Structure formats: structure tokens, C-alpha cells
Image (cartoon, rainbow, N blue to C red):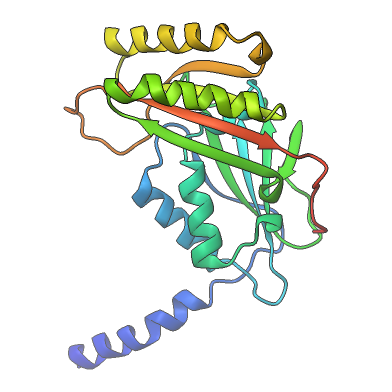
Length: 244
């Protein structure tokens, strides 16, 4: 009898998962305040994908809870922006115009240097969460690079600077990542980065240099990283929200 019960449950379970009802109103699916690594992002995408109504696809709203500017909020998000976007688009078919990116100063997290990030499902015709800035993923272009060795970071900074000089609409963010506390080497590297960028008058007001806790997955005994993340971000606000 027990064997037949187990077989029945195994047969029914996939159907149960596939029948998660779509929400009838705007719904907060997850909020992350400190760390959402790759496995976390996969789980997030699964949860979002399960509530998708194929006949009337909803919007996914990614809300950055920060008083900082939009580029800084995105660059220091508790969830890896690029990885989450790739999963939502490649695995679940969310087109960039169905992914809303918002910033609100009214929902701050509890960890300095990390932007608390929320993911909402917004059914067609329902209101997006409150925000002071709003664009769609199709209007945001992010070029992110990781510099892990001392031998590479000077060349990477030069390339980063030239990318900003070549595109007057872009904003640059240099993020020095650490787990527990920034090392002296990382602080020195950040000073060099700021000094390199400060030499270009044309970049004044178009770049930010920030120390921020890493949101990558790591063990408690892991050494603090000394690498940089470089973000070149362009936002075309003329490409507004698609109808919801």
C-alpha cells in the first residue's frame, strides 16, 4: 500500500508544481538584503517562473531599495543583476520590456554598502511598486567586468575610462568587493582607481568609486577578496515602459 502511495505522489507532484496559480494582484516574491548568489538566483527564477500566466504574461519588477543613484544601486544590488536577467530571459522567456527596474529610497536594507533588492510579480493591468525611478530592462545596457589580479587592474581601468570617454551617455561604477572588511590592498587599489579617473576632466560627475560587501557565495573562512567590479551603465529613458 505504501509503495502505491509513493508512486501516486510522484505522478501527481509535477502536475501540482505546474498548477501554481498566477497572482491576482501585485505580489512580492522575494526580498534580499545581503547575499543572493548563483544558486539563490536560480531558485528565485524558478519561483518567478511558476507564477507566470502564459495567456496574459505579467511584469517582473526588480526594485532597488536605495537612496543612491540608479547606477550605484544596480551595481551594489544584493542579487547579481546580470545573472538574474539572463535566467529570466533565457530560461523563462521574460522579454526585456516585461522586466521593470525601479529604485525606491523608502525600503532600505540593514547592511551598509549592499542595496536591498526586491522581486515582484505584477499582473497585467496592476500597479507597479512605488518608486522614484522606473525604466525597463530594454532601456538599460550594462557592461560589467571583473578584475581579479593586480597585473590586470591598471589595464582594465584604462579600458573602463576609455569606454566612458567614448560614450558621453554612460556612467561608470567601480566596486571594491569584500566579505567581512576591506583589506589594505583593496583600499589602496580603490585609491588608485579614483586617482586614475580623476585625471580626466570629461568624466567629472560620471563615475563612482564604492566599497561594498560582496554578495557572492562564500564560506565563513574565505579570505576577503581584493578584486574590482567595473560597471559601464547606459540608461535610455526614452524607451519607456511597455503597456502593463
